[in-house]
Length: 384
Image (tube, rainbow, N blue to C red; front, side):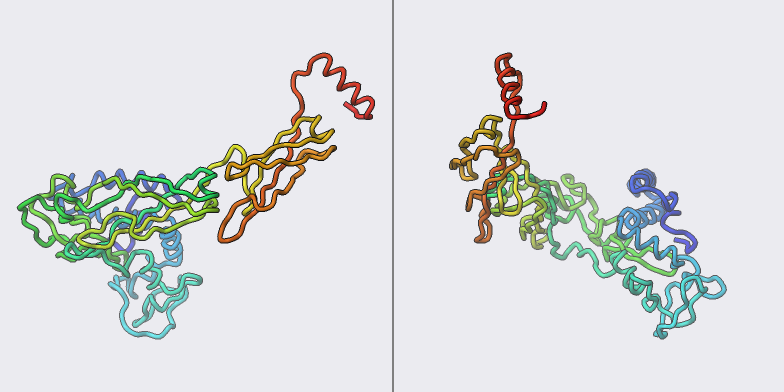
C-alpha cells in the first residue's frame, strides 16, 4: 500500500463516515474484489487484502479512535518518510529517546517509533501492536485451537433472579466440522502449504513504514489449503451447531450482573480447549414486586375508606406465604410498612418486605354514593 494512502482512502470514504457507511462500503468492495469472484486476478486479491485490513481497523470503534489520533499526528505522512521523500521501510537502530515533536519533519537516523510517546497513548510501537494484533498469531492448522467464546444477555423472570434457579438456553456456536475434523478438506484430498502465506497462516500488509500482520484471507489463517474443500463446511473447518446449556441463576441476581462459565462455549478445534460462556443477566419486571437492594417492595392498593378509617390487608411474600398488615386510620398514599426478614436472601444477608400503600379513588359512583361523599366532604371541611 502506498505510503500516501490511508485506510479511509483505501475504502473510498471520508474520515467523518459513520460506522454504518463504513460497513456498507466495505461489503460492497469486498464483494467486488473477493478472490472467489476474481480467480486468477492477482490485482483483485491485493485489493481485497487492502480492503480487509482497512476495515479491520476502521470497523472497530476503539481501533478507529487510535488510528485517527496517529493519523492526526502524522504517523502516516511526514514520519513515514526519510529525508528526501523515500520510504524507510521501518526505522531501525537503537537511537535515544530524542525524536521530533509531531509535525516537525522526518526523524533522525536511528529513531524508533517505539521511542515516540504519544501523550496518553504510550509508544507508537505499543499502540500499533494493540491496534493490529501484532502480539498474537492465529494457531496453524496442525495446532490445537481454543473454541469460540460467547457473550450473551439472558432475560430471567424476577422470582428466579431473586430466589435462584435454573434456566435452559440454546446457543448457536462455531464448532469443529465433524466431517473433516477441522481440516477443511474433503475425504482423500491433498493438503499443501498455502501459496499466499507460505504456510504461516498470516500475511503482512504495509502502511507507510509499518508492517501489520493479519490472518491470510486465502487459507483463513490455517496455513494450508486442500486440493478439494470439504462439502459440509466449504473448507472453513467449522460448522454451526446448537448447544443446550442449563444456566444456574444465583439467588439475588440483579440486572447487569455477569457470570463466566469456563468451557461452556464452542468446542475446541484439533483437541483445543472449549471456549467460555459469559452471561449478562437482565431481570424481567414482576407484577407485584420490585426491589431496592435486598429489600422487596410490594404495592398494595387500598380504597379511600380503608385508608381513612383503618383496615387490614393481606400481602403475599416471595415464597408464596401470606402476611397481614394493619393499616392505621388516616394512612396516606405512599406510606410503607416494613415486614422484617421477608426480602431477598443473598450471601447470608436477608432484606425486608416493604408494603407500600396506594390509595385508589372509587370509579363510577352511584347517585347515593356521590351524595354521601359530598356530605362527608362538607362535614370534614374538604374542598373539591
